[in-house]
Amino acid sequence: MNIQEVVERFDSEIMRLDNIKSEFCIHPKKDFTRDRKISFVSAIKSILSFGGGTLTNELLKINKFASDAPTSSAFVQQRDKISPKAFSTLFSMINQAFDQDNRYKGYRLMAVDGSRIHVPTNPQDANAYVKCKENERSHSEFHLNAMFDILQKVYTDAIVQKYRTQNEDKAMIEMIESAPYTKALVICDRGYESYNNMAHLQESGWKYIIRIKEPGSYGIADGLQLPECAIFDLPVHLSITRRRNKETKELLKNRNRYRYIPPKVTFDYLSKEFKRNDSADFFTLNFRVVRIEISEGSYELLVTNLPKEEFPMEELKKLYAMRWDIETAFRNLKYIVGMLGFHSRKSDSVMQEIYASLIMHNMTQFISNCVQLHTKENKYDYTIRFSVAATIVKSLFLGDISPPNAETLIRRNVSPVRPNRSYSRKPRAKTQIQFTYRIA
Image (cartoon, rainbow, N blue to C red; front, top):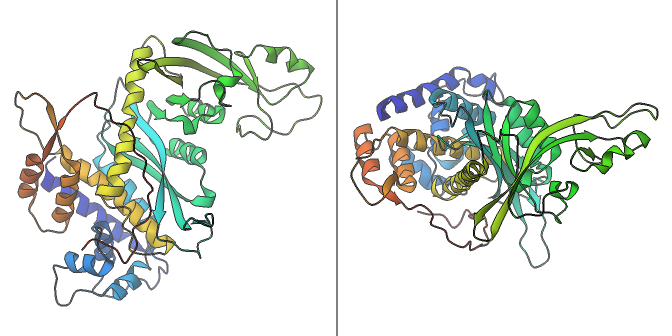
């Protein structure tokens, strides 16, 4: 598929959405039923094309600085008629249209993670409003839960939650159980360490690699009897129960074979209610606990249900390192695609722009995949510079450049791939971009 075909397919998916627009209008019987300057399609395309400027400046750019360009007030009235579900649906439609089903040893490689999104402060949205200490500025915050295809480098699913209602575990389970993939492998960081998540993954037929906390940190490792050596690969067949009585008292002494889960801990496959004389119910998890050395003197503890014969320790180390791509994708989504430059305080409008950014991130990657780089004998391999490609793709969809020119420009802007480079993290405070301080 070339860039011209990608653009045509992208436009056709938007037209498909337009054909069922009544499903995504706040008032289906009257919204977008009359011919207006800002149609349903033009409103959708405008939001997809937003950059970091003010709403007025963005509308001027999108409309080529025409004298009759719609005002920001007129645009806001039209966008308020569209449900955020329109963009989440378009996100799913485009992913299905361009999915290449790339696999690693027969598995879809998926990473799941969450990221905080500072949105324009809106005290009226109680679930998103974060009240801080006296010397700190209160703000509003959403939470993006995302599933990321590591081989295609695109987001395949996303659930947006507000600060006070966020639940990463629940979001991951929902994304996995609604995914159409078979034979998939999900890779997660320590935030997803729980027996409940492992049980859902096992029952869904998914494989997993989850990093867990070291012993002494009140995690899964504290309940197991692990080898004292630095590196190990321990198979575990763990039967979990909610009963602690005479029947299970002796069994629970074998820490690597039985585990008690108290009622206050979430575990969806065992009932919290039972009669005193009922026999104990068990749910069995089969997994490996693997401790790998990632660098000299530095170790990570993983749990996985991958077979040891096909996925030894070195293979797990390689796969877990690939999870970092979702962290890079979050950075690209926020600071290159421009997800942090919101153009409204309203929650529905913020949701529109979050999914619009996800769509444009994926479209940048889909179009970049169409560009074949020149093969030369260089010191390094080269990859397309995502920051430049994202700008070119927005101009392409606005009709400012042609597909052949877009391909030439993307091919010219590449960066060398330098493996095994690492830099120490330098955490910095991040806040939302205020409306009065926008890029021109």
